[in-house]
Length: 257
Image 1 (cartoon, rainbow, N blue to C red):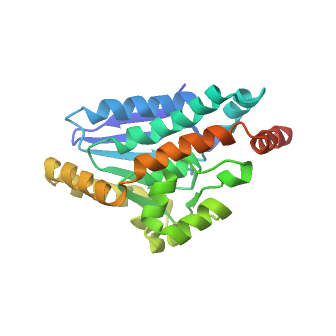
Image 2: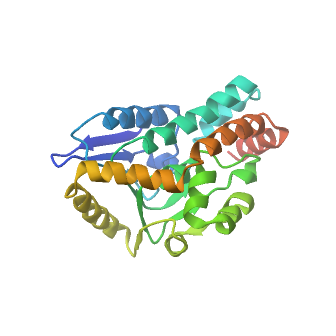
Image 3: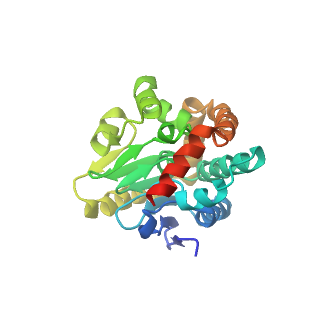
């Protein structure tokens, strides 16, 4: 099973929910491929007016499925395998960003690693108070990817993004709102759906063409170096996935589990 639930309602609101609660909604190869497939299809579907991303079971997405990475890294990544891993993550986030319609992320619980990149790839982000964002790549000898080096810096500014990326600092939902990373915080998780529904209704009441062109203009103004960031992430992460530091981190994780 790919662990992804999806559907489009009669109003044109498409929903994509990560449904792997036992893994805290960590993304494996199958789930990532399904998200890419859905977003690619929806990008050309005139019925779709808004896309909502979420995770089931009290987590948005805890990052890449480390158990899958353990299997892939058992003998060490060569350059081709390492590049394939990082390019898949880049395609995942690229598919979300390529959607011409507004994308809303409903974040309840942790958004970690590629999960944080996925959430911040959305155009509007709402979170419950128990949520947090974490780019802890450096702790296992890697660097942020999925465009996070561009998207977090564009939203938070250089100083706060540096603290998250270089020090692995956790950013709680209220701090994320105060810092400009997200659009709203709800006190209780059960309120999150109401807030997201309200935003989706406002969007579908607007001109689709106006929303599409406005979204493109905003991206052009705030993320004009996004493609450069992706290229640097692919090169850097390809190198780091082959490093002794990453191999040691993976071995330590395997020993604990």
